[in-house]
Image (cartoon, rainbow, N blue to C red; front, side):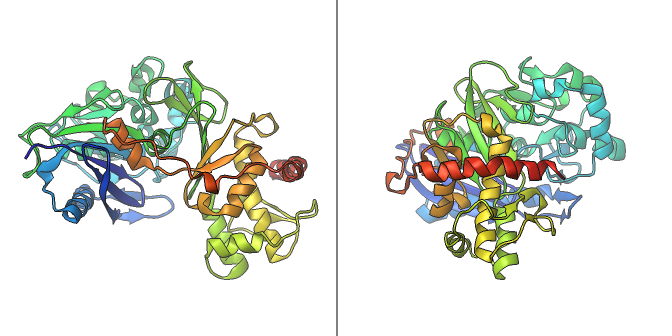
Length: 458
């Protein structure tokens, strides 16, 4: 069998997902499996490398069995992934311990040390506005202090590990590598100051290739059943793959209303940083992206729904919010305070509090994107579960003062396209688009400064 199919893979934090595409770019089948954690608390998050590979292979089998194809039909496997999650491997690629997830928070002391060593240059080189315990460089230093690190040991990011088990060399892409904290967007190589501060050598971090560049596999470690011509393609972080898949453009940023809230835009050909609070990095094909994020979007919405109405039912929540009469006396909601008595400022009916919840999450994103200085684009694509709520889409169009179009693609589409599979950019669902309404936009414009004042008061 001549291998002609592309398997796009999204190594998410909750689920692994794959989609199988034929040589014409048609999406044939999918597979999805929950990602099992060894431990997952508010401070620790670890994954068993064997369970990681079993989860991935279960997804692959599901997608192949759905269309009756063998693994030998796959020509390329493309990976988009959560960032920062890594494990330490020996020189041959064998894991020496569990994966440390990007949600692990034990490296506080190491992050403080590295912040003192690297300072504000960290933003200019890696794209992160602030060095955090969750970054690979912090967690790798924590591992080194607590478990030791031999000169021949390797720091292996999650997609790199899966690719190595499929026969690829230790490789990452130029989108994920900076998010580890070790790679410089400016130097376009492993950052010398980060290596010195951590005491970790570039040889322990592997090679870096541009997103979309095929990486060959070796028969010495390739699993049985896969083609001898199998190639690996690294497709960057999940937000980049999603933006690429749905046609993000300079005047068409992407708003994601998922567990977190993200506003992703193309910033142009010049190096960042583009604002003090945003993450930045390379975009496929050239230029750079600029990303602002709030930690809680649908997570805060779900909590508010359960608090106000007893259960989580997002369409019902949006319908109840739509019953509120918009006035300047409505309460304000602050998503960073969800789960506390301070989440709402002011009082109102359940419908009014539901309205202010949806408003407050969007206000938090607007604040992160520059507040009153935000320049509305020509249009915006909206992704994520929250983006399927028509009431919230319309509110977002009013608050950001631009038309919103629901995106019809996902990170798997973007990963396949980056693997040079001819997947067409899906057409926008124009019948679900929302245009800003002048009267409602003015209402939100006058409420935003008072909301911001309440945010700054705590």
